[in-house]
Image (cartoon, rainbow, N blue to C red):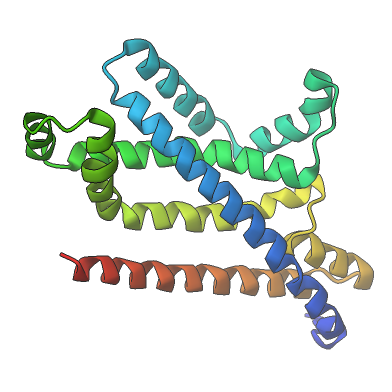
Length: 219
């Protein structure tokens, strides 16, 4: 093995600059996906059949096709459909948000259905409006129960964000690949990128566990 990590040391700060790009995409897409997931989950438990069907169809499409395909359809296909070339960063956020919303909707739906029916019956008996009941009573309990699953989805989103390098977004992976091309040596910079992703996931895991413990203390 002919490995030389010394030659890429000057380029490590350049690779580290990709962390902010990755985090911006993941945080924004995660937030939008969470909001979309709540909306879809409420549609899935609605008594209106057409809304159930639309939400289920959306989830089926985005869970049944590869994320990289969705990313490329949005980025490369947008000029053909809209006549406008969407920016790589925008395409990344949009595709991740749409994809994450499908998965989050199933997580939230399961959390809502897991809440004891007595909670809903008691609220209805007291005359609490449906919207207020879901927002103030049902959803807080559901989110508390599904927090680990939501954190797992956010961690998966962080790792999957590496595919944005395929459309030229200057994230961690893209920068490490450029460093490898500069020195004609890819193993070392890609290993550094892998270490960065691993540390990010470990930090997110610790934050998730800390938040879970904090919420348990409120029981």
